[in-house]
Length: 170
Image (tube, rainbow, N blue to C red; front, side, top):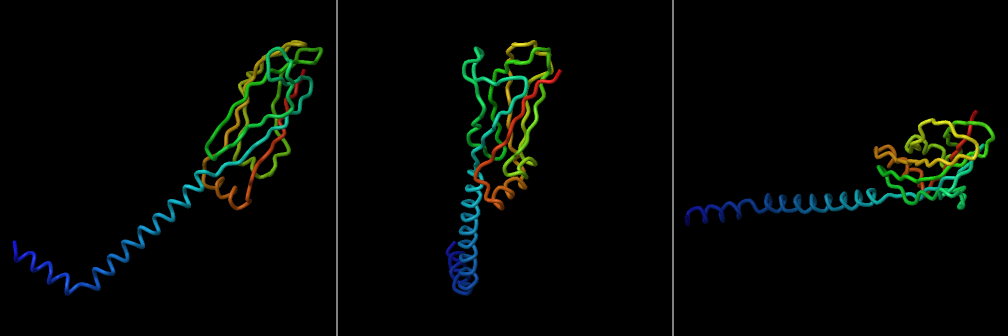
């Protein structure tokens, strides 16, 4: 056992430069890993406030089923890459004929963000009678792919907005 200890000490004395180099490489690896972790944690916290402006034709949008709190905006709040939000609205027909509803978006700001967000709803195409009120839920989701994160950073996107069109059609 004493022989092994003496061999180790002899190896250590003859390999001081090698051991010093290994120690430097290990410390640099820890520093680089820590820096990358900090940078990635900042990307994970990347968030953007979002707003939806509601535009209607032949219908009106409300927050409540009694149609007392009309709305023209949806504050989606903070969105993160990979997140989704939903909002329930009550849609009242102001048409005097039976209609179906269509959902469209326009005026996205910034315009290119449309590649990375998706707006949908749970409306299934039932016909609305005049003055009828139905409940719909809108779903907004943001992509999690790397190109969306790069887009947000490269364009310094601080928020986004979209016009949401709910249109009644005969």
